[in-house]
Image (cartoon, rainbow, N blue to C red):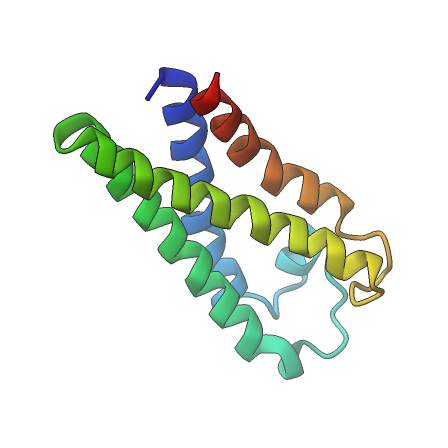
Length: 132
């Protein structure tokens, strides 16, 4: 696995892990809502889902970091498979955020564009670097 793919995968993983406490525990804070581009209305009703999504993202991040460790210090083929699975999850999760926006589930509508692009860019670059 080349350096570009590894760096992009590692940064994506760290971001997923870092966003977890925001989604899981701090979602009711105005600065977090602004950062994540979400409306404050109804936060108590979606806190459970925000916690679960944050936890899933953190697990994907941890799994990707474990895969990177395996690439460099263990079985490279198995580690690459683990990293690819983590990257595909991160990319698809980001794209589904955009789909939710297109379906009108994001308020305000169009509010996910920045997050969708930001969250999908590094996993996409890493996957492209793997096949290049």
